[in-house]
Length: 124
Image (cartoon, rainbow, N blue to C red):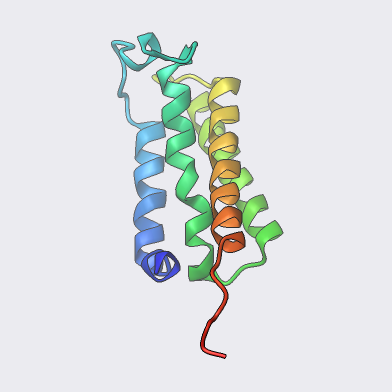
């Protein structure tokens, strides 16, 4: 059911656009997210991980091998932070990049867990 929901390429395109807008628009200029802490780390790191967690769920839409999809995700995560480096109103932060990558790996872990808990077919 989840793979059918995320198999739409338009949904993935929308996801990419939203992430790109979040990393390029001059939001958080007052630093509200930077002042929130969740379990002794800044809230924006948590939101970076949360934003990149869905990456793995879009894999079925493109029928890619898992290592390639992970590599493309890592490139996208690094690219979004690299884009912030060249924008004068945004800032590159290696911790944000780590949050992006961590979120992706958590997503891959969730998918692996779901696959391992698959109930065997009882029709036989």
